[in-house]
Amino acid sequence: MAITRLVRRFPVLPLDGEVTWNGRLNLRGPAALPVACGPGSGT
Image 1 (cartoon, rainbow, N blue to C red):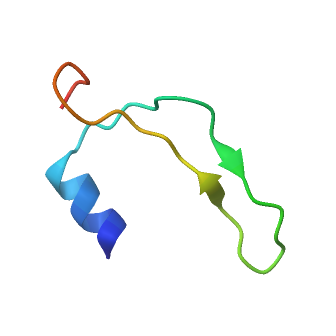
Image 2 (cartoon, helix red, strand yellow; image 1 turned 180 degrees about the vertical axis):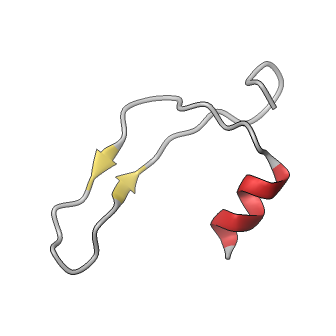
């Protein structure tokens, strides 16, 4: 739900660093997903 609201509010969120993936088998996905949000970041 929080991700959906974030994407709706900021439809353009450029990456601001390296995506770090977690190594868990039961909960797959990124451990860290840095994005730029603010003046000059394309929002």
